[in-house]
Amino acid sequence: MNDTTGLETRVREAKETLGDSLVILGHHYQRDDVIQFADFRGDSLKLARDAAGCQDAKYIVFCGVHFMAETADILSQPEQAVLLPDLEAGCSLAEMASLSDVEEAWAQLGVVMDVESEVMPITYVNSLAALKAFCGQHGGSVCTSSNAAKVLAWAFERRPRVLFFPDQHLGRNTAKKMGIPLGEMVLWNPSRPLGGNDAEALKRARVFLWRGFCNVHQRFLPGHVTAWRERDPEIRVIVHPECEMAVVDLADEAGSTAYIVKRVEESPPGTRWAIGTEANLVNRLKQEHPEQFIDHLSPEPSYCRTMNLITPEKLARVLDGLVVGRIINRITVPNDVARDARVALERMLEAS
Ligand code: SF4
Image (cartoon, rainbow, N blue to C red):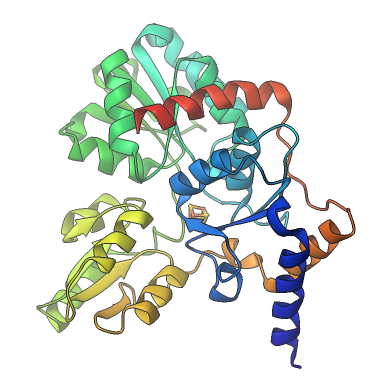
């Protein structure tokens, strides 16, 4: 038996032993040799719902990154344990906004306007639990790339302005699509006073965009779209809204991971796609749809380094521990943070 087969057998046997007490959630960006073990697979929104729904399982093993496991812990029952096979699997985008920086931004905006009545804080789900709690405390909500437009619409029904963190591109692309002019959006640089703006510009703005980005999606460039079009006039370019605005504007379509999967699944044989999102998902779509032509938008496939830290070996280690009653790599959000973050997450689930 080679190593790969041995590991697969170990994981399958542990799953069988643990039975209904275990649920494995897997994000679309996971490697094939990991996602094959997921009981539920999906994007952040679907997995947040799955985590809230699997109330009978004692253990939820999250094959994804840290903020996703935190969200699962917040939405699961207190007696359920959420485990992440590698504690180093973080998200560089989520780490671009700290609680102290967001509190400071809130205080600085508060000098220019009445924040509690005028500004709705919205955090992308790719963020620390403490920021979701901040939104919960200040009337705000969470969004994913699947429901960002619905959540922003919800926010604007309640307050005239939005502070959106940490991903500037998702915020800008979504607000633009909703008809908000670029002139009414400002970038908030947390290392500069008033985010690098003057008070008048802040008063004119309806959207304050935190200066964060996903380095996996920011690698896609407008030149990649034009190069494909020159090579292949039949190509349809579809990208994730974490890509910069110039790329989204040039693409034929933009949407969340779930949207991209759905569009490919429902397209007729012969459709030709260049896809601008994480490479594991593009490779999988390519394998699952040989009747279509599917390729990466950029010449070099763009992988998420931290998603790829989850391996069958690390999954097997966590499951072997559970079989002997040992919980390793548990993700626990402190009760007070979880309580406020849950308020914001529930607002999101209701709005979407
Ligand atoms: S793809 Fe980007 S946003 Fe998603 S986990 Fe990786 S770094 Fe974070």
